[in-house]
Image (cartoon, rainbow, N blue to C red; front, side, top):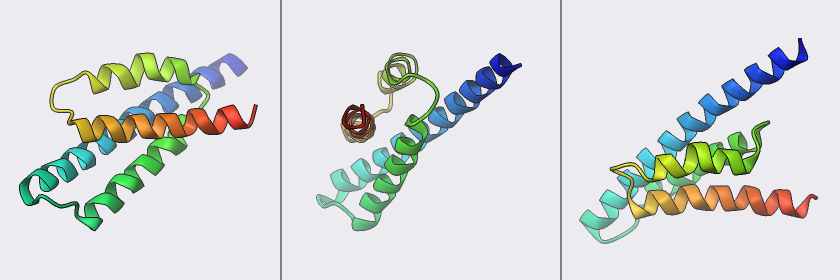
Length: 106
């Protein structure tokens, strides 16, 4: 019975991470587009990117090992078409923040 709960928690966590990844990429791609168009960073865009990253960070603190999240979810998503360098940086920064925090608490 506990295995069923564990499996369901992992499945839900994976879905949440996928949604958050997609959101970070969408918001960061839009911010990149605006920066390229105007030549300046819009504070509203930066807040949106930060909020999306914060949501991803929360989801990365999940029952799935971070190495597995990186190899199964993050890397394949970032290799896809339509992901700007800014979006890659935002996702990788969120991942590195979680790694750093976990490393400090071990």
